[in-house]
Length: 502
Image (cartoon, rainbow, N blue to C red):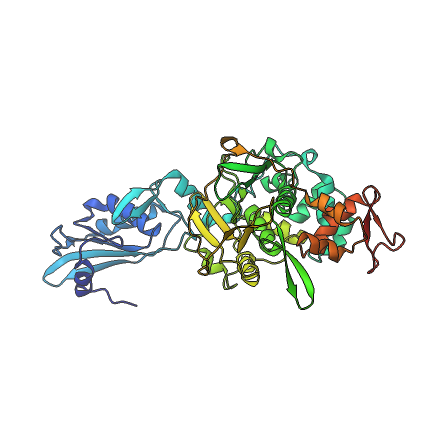
């Protein structure tokens, strides 16, 4: 513990006021001083000292019982309540004259934001300013994310009738199959009880915002920001696009739409591994999956006019998400699993995890980097351009869908020769050149299965390593109509193959 002496005070004030030091002549400026104290608590902490003249001469002031009471009463006006020690240091050459020194520690917003006499302040360099409402609300959410988060806000306008009950049942069954929901939940039939189990409803019958964006039949009726924009542009800028769509479904529908769009527009390339050919997407499936989940689980929901977007160019794919990294952190903090998962929307992320869509907590950025490195792609770029976070994955060699010839090549330094803008796109402002050669992933499956193919062969053809997802999306819905099993009486046989019904 530091011994506060006059010599210590002299050292503190030697360089005049700073971001963490405020000097007042007497407690006649107590009110202004407490505004600064509030700013210290909401910034980086600091010293508030009374008894120092503007010339930086220590003059002290006469301190009575009334003075001590005034200081104590002023401190009580700071909320939440704080426990600080007020130091009264007597001047050696002036009996009954004291320097009053108080240190206010920053708590990194764990209990904040702090206010004094009903108003909140913070520091801008060495100046104390009133905290804007938006910043106050952000700090309030940081201090208690679960209580003040958008996803956990109960919404009286949401009813059970607004929910896709089939999606609720499927999520419950998938979670049990992934062993992330206990098997005893299989008996649940009431949609409200399933939502309680998944943490998107309350015991008093109120349904949370998270339920609408996860399971809503038409979530944009209440939350117009529940959408995602997708575009495939011609070349390396936004002047001409080949394909574009806007998905206004719930988050699981958005996830499927993004994956389908990427499988449709990212080319397959092959390489020889030993004596076998391996087909891969331009961007690893694992990177696409993790980037999509990050985009859906970590986005900000507070602004109705900002939505996620995905843009595919000839040389890169860009995931753009409204949001930011946790205060004081950057994307590098999450690469090596040194920090646990800190999702912006833990309730939404937990549903993705329990369903089995998200494989593990807190590994998204690390898996994206790892999968791109294994496929010998340049290091992905992550940039924060408020209010968005942009993830750019560069192609090693971009192929045009029409000619299948190299259109762009990253040099050996893995650095692009140009830095195009990664801001949001507005499809209505660019030209549209459709390409008749573009085939959907489902059409590719039907064409590929004109001769019997196994689930492994179909997944490899699509450049996907998630066989369960391929079976669910491209095989199971079409059995009996467009596809048939070669061993229909043993649907789970290891030798099972699928053939297109002509």
